Image (cartoon, rainbow, N blue to C red):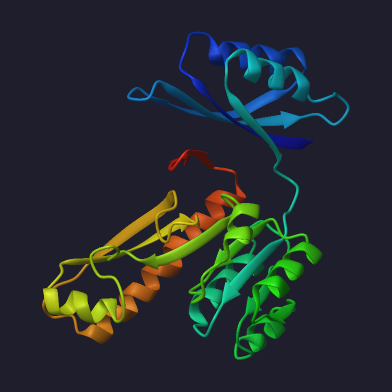
Length: 272
């Protein structure tokens, strides 16, 4: 068996699910799960279908694409068994990188062993611990060459403190995930936790999003918060912030790898 994952967006109209189901049934495919959402404000229909596909039967990809055209929609079909190549970008902070490699080693992140790219040598020991390839890259052309040579599909920015150039952002549209503290845009600039402490905030959080050419304005994938109070020191806040950043980044990467995110313009639909 070889599971297929179908993501489909189209204007909301009658009979969408019936037509998709009919195509899959006639091609002897078994539907394992269906998740759908209707955006009434914009009249958009979203659906994610997991299909059990028998290798001996041809998957009706052409018929599904024809239906997508008929319904004025957009369809993506993925092979859930195929692992993609991932690159983790880091600068000096090791915690989020360690967390991603540990999650991959435990089987929680379904992808090939990530490569690690940094503008410093300090993180090379992490790659060595996980038998991963490490690259030091200080210029954008070298980064691009590495990405192409390694056939990278997904880029994860794990506290990478450099701006990704426009040509790479455009090449990897909706395939670069970044994490930042949830204070943006209220606490921009240096020492956001110090700023938040002085303001007496009552929650801290983190946001994982896709990278666009507008800084920190890409489609949001996952967010989370944790309550704090006057008893928390700046050190406490920074530690809680790091913990929630790791969790949010992992959840975003996992959702992307499992094709649970559907993107329409600057909005995401995240299925469970």
